[in-house]
Amino acid sequence: MQRSGGRGRAAGPARDLCRWWRTARPCLYPGAVFLLAFAIRLWWVRHWILPPYGDQPSLEAFAANVAHGHYYGTHGAYWPPAFVFFAGLVERVFGTGHAYLAVRTADAAVSALCAGITADLGRRLLRSPEAGLAAGVLFALYAPSVYYSDAFLAVTFATAAFAAAADAIAAYADAPSTPQLLLAGALLGIGALSKPTEVPLIVPAFIHWALRRRSGFDWRFAGRSAAAALAVALLVVAPWTLRNLRVTGAPVLVDTNGGVNFLIAHNPAADGAWVNLGPANPVLLRGSGYDRPNTDQLAWQAGLRYFLRHPGAGLRQARTVVRMFWGMTDPDIATYGAGLRPVTADLHIPLLRFALLRDLAALGAVGLFLRRRRTALLWVTVLGYCGGYALFFFAPRFRLPVTPLLAVAAAAALQQLAVGWARQWQAAHAPREALGRVDPAA
Image (cartoon, rainbow, N blue to C red; front, side, top):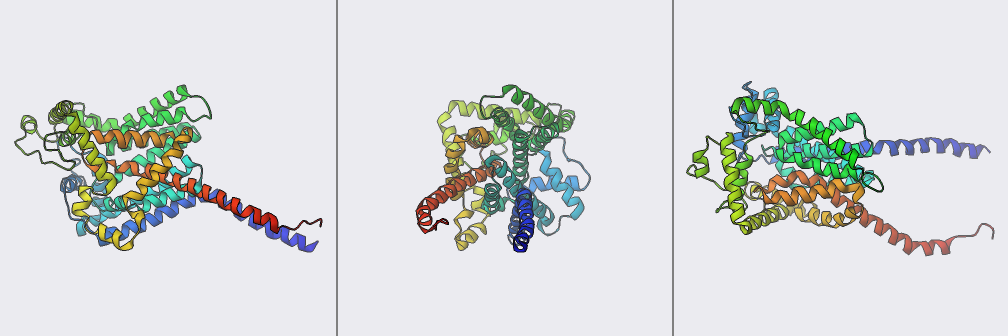
């Protein structure tokens, strides 16, 4: 009797510990992923300081304007403001010494936060904390996300904003509430201030919310929710749009560099990388400068004319850029990431390369489509963002915001493989266990 009581007393704390672990792991896993990702990125930032290249000097100049109290510092609206103000505030507090180390470290923290968000998003979409943990670790180890956390560019901030908005959208589908909907809309607005091309995420959100039930389509709920979230997002963007209207005289939603990027991708010299249009370019000659609305409009018109007249060239351009993205031959990485390739080669870790994440994501996509009611947000966004986006802009790094979703898809593949292996193991060992059992009645 006493022994039985002892076992009961011992079982109580064990049950409590198991109950605590089941409750706590959804929070502990993203936190652990954040720490892992931040340690990796902090090491990278401290040991591989990239030289300023491409857009970085311009972004640094705008951030310096903010740091010195000059606000945006121009009468145009060329760069989306979110990263400019983020970097400027970091510089104002910590300074700009040692190759802008403060901003690079802050960006590393943002990228690590994105890894933690990816873990939470995976948990929600795949209904498994362990699958979410796998997704977060995949993103934490993903070489391009590590590389860009050291680059003075907006893409890391934009990727985190995109992942956070997607996570809030998934959370609202699981447990609809007004605060959660407001959060999803606000994060979508922050994403738009990072990259205006993140606004269309509201379309996958609408589809995801419409498919949240086990059967049928809840179009009314999805329509109301999407309209409300989009309204909140536009309210977040509105102050900047009003500023643009006041200083440029035109209703510029966020920035004016979309047209120039589109023209770089759709002109006779387009080759999948950056093309110097040159000061003699007729579009730039007729415009008033890169940061002016009329140049943006003229560039859109010129790029669209070229695309319509040469659709084959436009599709080949898209294919080239997607191949660069998947093959880790992004011109940024190939030209300025000389330290990245030796590291990945010396470690012999295929996980650090594009190919494994790509292949696992493709495998996971099959299963995700079969579970499309639960994961519509993921596969619709990947197809729309990575597939459709490739037709419009040139830089492979512009596709980086979709990688948290690819990590979730890859984690789904690992989940499917683990379940399959577990079933095979059980099938192989069940007969042996049955033979080894002793009948208590015998």
